[in-house]
Image (cartoon, rainbow, N blue to C red; front, side):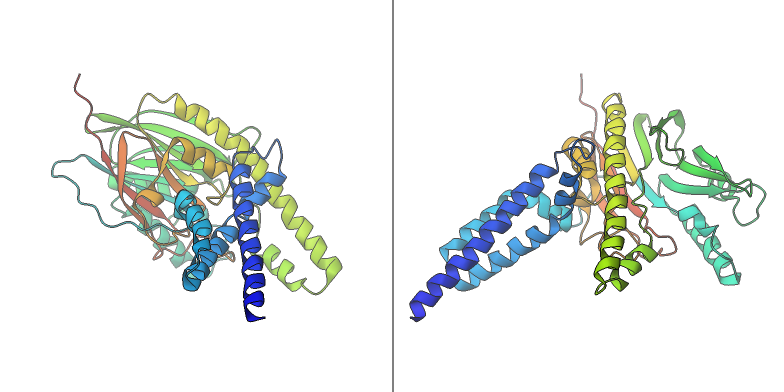
Amino acid sequence: MAASFRSIRRRVWLTLNTLVVLWILLGVLCLQVPPAEFWPAAFIAFSLPAPLALNFLFLLYWLLRRSWLVVLPLSVFIFGWGYYARLASINFEEEVAAGAKTLQVLSFNTHVFNAYTNHDGSEIEASMDMIEWVATHPADIICLQEFYSNRGSSTYNTISKIGNRYNRYRFFSVSYVDRNKADVGTAIFSKYPIVNKGVIRFGESHVNRAIWADVDVKGDTVRIYSAHLQSMSIKSQDIENTYSAIGNEESFKKEGRNLARRLKRGFVARGNQVELLLEHIRESPYPVIISGDFNDIPFSYTYNEMAEELKNAFVAAGSGIGATYNGPLPFLRIDNQFYSEALQAYDFETHYEMGLSDHFPISAKYVLQPKAQE
């Protein structure tokens, strides 16, 4: 009787493990599907962290049972390691050869330096702290999204405080001018000369765009992109409303549909935007580093398209989960730096000490590979 029960239990767990593996395979396939062509695929891909975590639990379960069935989750873990690395990364500090040419890049969605927050004395002080933190960061290149500058304000004259004060070259693409006559957009600041620059506009969106600058790094040119893709458009109030609606079927369905519509709209928009971005990157005559707010998790068509052609700095040189969203949804890594083959990331950091925006800044250090001798 006991043996029969163990056999039934094993079959049940094996069936569940098999279903989890099929879920993973379906999710991986859905990563390849443009949301504009079949948007439900984006939601299936979005769910991938769940079956990946369940597969790891099955791996531990079969190990503890000392069962040969551990082969199933172990195979998924080994062959799917690249997807597990998107969840969490483990890297050790690398030494850089003496005399190597290096470059540090900082990326930060500044949330307009909180300029639109209802101010009291502490809020103004927080904005000033954020601006000072960016201005004094030692990075060679600083890429800023939702950048805000008001020449008529002593607090928010950020072009002067970040650029002029530290003799940085700059490229600021203004998306719009607000009612305070302040400029809002995307910016690149560089210690090295900018020899060329341009803007990639994403269709009708006047806010979301990518800008690029060719930077002369001690005789080598690197193309730097600062990108801001379509927002998820999900506010903390939307999350709270959905949670509070649990138990009220009609209200929960309403809030759930609202969230789903917002997610769908974002998936489709970012899928189109990343294709435009990659078209431009493929034409670059120089090594590229693209950093910014992608507004999509590593299990998305947007991220997957980037990762198929470029390396991710967090995966290559980071450690931990690397969450960059400072909001009500935990563990989201939606800010990234990608780079091409002629570079190598050797250090990556998520700056949790700067928690004044709804994003945490990220920085990476790169080695520029020597040019092949002709």
